[in-house]
Image (cartoon, rainbow, N blue to C red; front, side, top):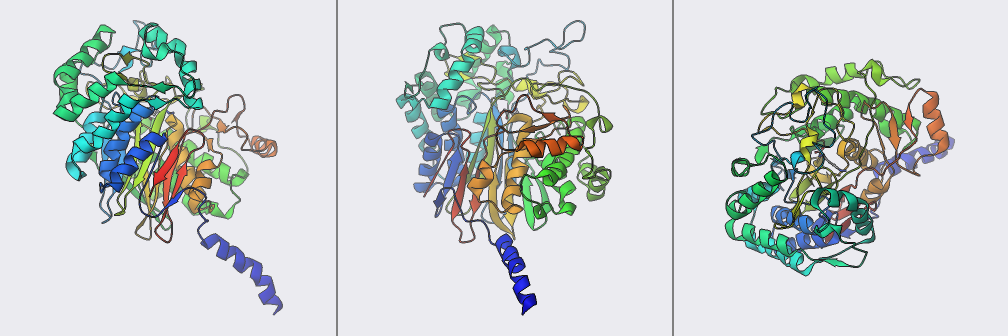
Length: 560
Ligand code: DON
């Protein structure tokens, strides 16, 4: 009897651990879109209400974000999707930008071999050949069920009607004002002072989208729009030509797939580093049963940090565009190799990154990308991350065509050992070459549990994308948080170099930081930006969907 009484709390505990957390985010019966703006989530969700599938909704949401969220949503940038159909079939699409034909390895170096400041980040010289429009057509041709015109019409209508400025957006536009003017002159559209509640209309973008509606992919990559775009970029000193645009193609890629405990994860393969790097992180922590510790306490933070440190060291050295470099994936993802990488890990002391590599660098600019997650009524799922790279990309804005152009060329390694704007240090594998794709950290991910769809996850955040996605999955699966709680939870990050752990503001106690410091962890206490804006969906045991929309932004879940 006494034994039984003693066992009750243990049984309750096990019981608690096994029951999935009750949802705290939006719950819908059938279908959902979670994205950076309510307008885009609504357009995507409406498409599915009208009978469209998740792929149709992807096309509409991606294009709607180009209107509603010009900070990162785009037709002048690129991205990746990972999908899982309801029959279990999976795949990935790479619509990443590529280097123009005129690009070459040393294009951002001066005569002394030094990196020329801003050349790969600001203005026309930073622009890679955009991939987004090719991406949506590829998705639509392969899997779409509604006519393309029906998907783009609500987006054109939104551009004409205009989008109401939110508080956060007004602040952002204001903070970028001087850079807009520097790059585009003071008569540029975004030099105007917009305040919250104002409506911004996009008539020129509506015109470009109409050309795409009428002529398909060629409406962007050939003819009038392509000619205007290429001349504009070249007049501003950039390298993208009509030929570059004509030659652009999105590419289907096999995702990275791996098991973690009872989960099967499906994530983006190179030229994104996301899938390979989270695969390494999960496999390095798997033997340690991270869920037995309390959430966001010293031990799980140490374990995660040490795995991330080692994974990013590999990322920066080995990964690049698989069409140009051989990536030793077999070795990098081998269990024995990964367990060996963690051999010197101990909870007593931090491993210093100098023991894994060397160098000391700063992360200079915080910038933006955007992620959205979709599940349709048939159970098809799409995880999509899309970007201009920096906030508003290169800041170069075509008044005539109505959109911003990316500064994705900065994701290449301009010079081995010299950090890019995320402080990432690259190597030969990610050097510049004509038509090569620059290495990405974007990590659109889908997780299965017991063979069924379980989570759809992703986020912006540059180099912090990978750790934010991994932590969100762990938050649900190991720490038993709801989808919304997992998204809300404060995040931390380590990327090998610079050798410090970064914590989000207000989420971690002084005592915890002191404890980690006493073990030799270097902590970035100066600048603590928010990390990512995770937009995710969890499939609940009863088949309903729970959204996790990141309150760090204006992100919103919409569904039915
Ligand atoms: O592809 C990449 O990894 C970067 N261009 C992503 C940029 C990004 O997430 C900026 N957002 N904060």
